[in-house]
Amino acid sequence: MSWRGAKLLRACVGTVLLLGACATYHPQPLDPSPGLASSLGQLQLQVKGGGHPELPQAWRDRTVNADDDLDEVEISLLVVLNSPNLRAARMQMGEARARLIKAGLLPDPQFSTSFDFPTSKDSSLMTGYSFGLGFDLQSLITRGARRSAATQRARATWFHVLWQEWQVIQQARMLYRRTLIQRRQMEVMRDQYLQSRHTWEGRKTALSQGDGTLDQEGLALAPMMSARAAWMEARRQYNATVHGLTRLIGVAPTVPLPLSMPPGGLESLLARPSKGHVLRRMLSSIGKRRPDLLALRTGYEAQEASVRQQILAQFPSFTIGANRLRDTGGVWTLGPFVNLNLPLLNGNRGNIAVARATRGRLRAEYHEQLTSAYVQASQLAKDQSLAFDEWRALVSRLPTLEVTVKRMANALRAGEIDMLTFTTLRNAYFSQQIRSLTLEQALLEQTIALDTLTGTLLPGSVRRAPRNP
Image (cartoon, rainbow, N blue to C red; front, side, top):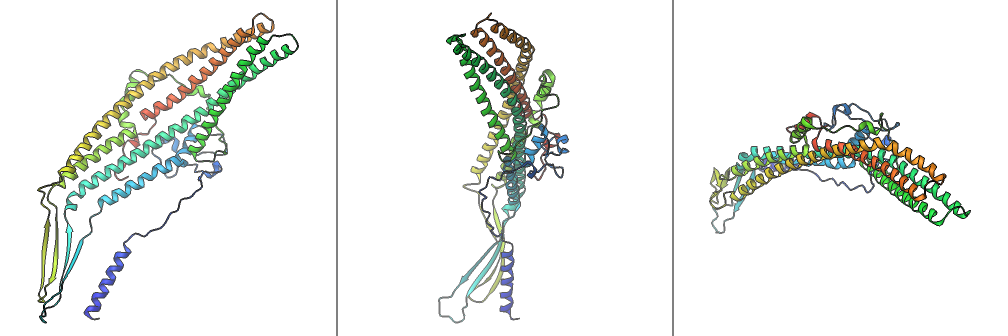
């Protein structure tokens, strides 16, 4: 093979290798369908491979039985395994890994070439050309700090995703409890409506038969209309809660969710809130447990690495390489070259100032968020304690009020009291029932909110993100 043929072959092989290392484009068109499952059986029902560190260890061993009623843990598992919200949130980790790969890549070598064409008529002159190959050494100096910053940012992203998962889990628990308590509220309001309607119908019949008065019918009609409006509003709220739960799970709104009541009823989930040293210990560990605060801390560490990277980048950057040259006289030369950037006017001082200012801002944001979380959790614990005391006192008096209402109903039939007195007392009884259920709902949701703010149920393994998420 001739010299020119060998040279051409090497050029072709090099071109093929370069093209083979290039990425290729593959379109991914959007799917216009909602992507919701048409039944619970289409969902993932079991944690696989020991994944999902955001779940308590006892939950990871559970399997969802889609053919039976679903309890709180099963609802939480369905959400973790299938929620469209979390599917979108977890895609952030792919971006973080890609940025980590980018931070570790070295710049490509720099190839240069030039040609000199003689313009004189001297036949002894020939075309001169040169080839140069260089490499930027500055990237090697800053590579360690750059990778450290990217690693910390990836870990911060991992904590951010974990915080979103944790919030969605608590939202699922809250919607589960809210669904059950709203069912009971609807039952009470329906009972109130039916009783008030029965009373109104009796007053209306008595008026038509000449045994009643118009004011008695009006006093019975107004409570009936109010009770029906309250019942319809409760049904709308229940509908919104159920749709929120199905959307969170990732199933179509038409799919029924058979929820099971806790073995001891919803009251079994109520307990006196933590106080004293137990509460103080729980509050003091917020910064070590909550993923969003851990993300802020890791983000600060990433910015520390960025400051170091910018300081390293202030030193003179230089490129080294070698030139292969043939001049117009046919003389071949080979020699090294160095391109040096002198930091006399810029010196990367602007980037250093920005990096340091950003580090100061992140430090202030972390302490502000930590303080806010501490105060919010403390306030919520106090509110929960007050609500618990009010709920317990109200529940203890409701049976007595119920007996009084029944006696007043007998007195009304006997003509011993008027309609206004009876309807006022009965409405007060139903209002206290609704108040009791409202307090119960608040306590159930405050328990979950406190778990969210303090990260109480989070396993200890999530406090540390993997070094390379």
